[in-house]
Length: 231
Image (cartoon, rainbow, N blue to C red; front, top):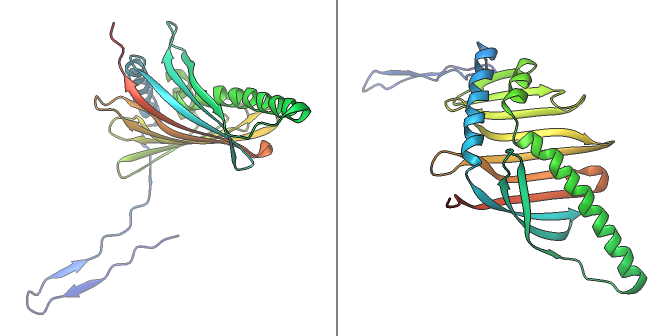
């Protein structure tokens, strides 16, 4: 427990006294239901704006701390509002082996890429929550405010045992930062996601790191080149 300490100092010339301000602890949200609806509406409107953009994501797939492949994809949304990813470029950063060792290496890379692709798809659900999921999460969450930020901590959001810690801008109720833990089968998935606003205020993911300790694998992604296609 941190106790605030007050100190008073007197200037002999000015005869004024100053007192240190007490430390401010995070405050519990006063109306979680109202905050849930506000956040849900804000996120829904933001997603509608984001769906007018296309952008690119550069992903570094790592295994045992070593980069295995770099991939660039163009991201957008289909008519149903689902995220689409179109490969633009990709390269393997490992030295290619020949013969049987080469075929074994290709198989391992293919399996790793397929597995990490599934991990990415599951992670997207946490990065871009629907209004309904967000409202449900708020109902079971611990919500606190500190300064200009609202922190939402919840468990069992998509599955039993997962956790989400979401930091929102209290004024806009849009996401600034997100961490989550989930499961891919028996494997733990740990995500760390940073968000920022474009010039028009639309908030999007800027960077993310998805860690799968059981596989010794990481997916490190960076988003860039956000543009609005001409109709």
